[in-house]
Length: 167
Image 1 (tube, rainbow, N blue to C red):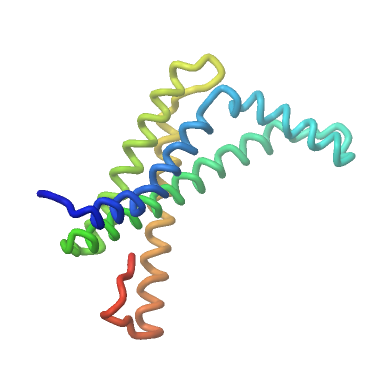
Image 2 (cartoon, rainbow, N blue to C red):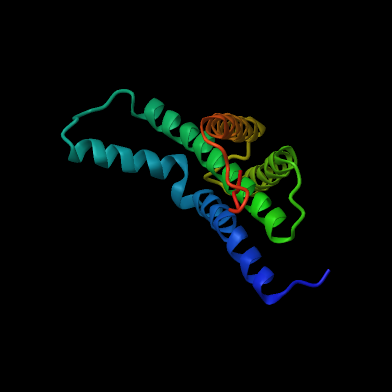
């Protein structure tokens, strides 16, 4: 299949947010954002805010980090969903939304697995299958909520067939 210049440009911009999302995930999985470093940052922030000795700082650091996993991969799955839906529109192969959900979920799983595998080689990080499960739970929840929101929006107002939507 040969793409026109316009299609190539449109595909580039359709996938750019997802690529940036993957880049952000990659940067976050570095040594600089390990639990030790984020814990030190929280400690300094707590002292600066005048919290004094904070007893639960390790627990709060852990909760923030796991919330980041859930939310970050949830957002990434939506960026993949957007890219797949736009790709279908650009190539005039508008498939079912269900396929875009499946493909975006699979892409998110691939990134999460690769991220955890990468972290297993860093002394300050751990590559844990539990984190992949947490990441995928975030992806599933975000994709489900988005699909429910789309269904609600469609019932609330009719969609114009003249415009291109990523839903």
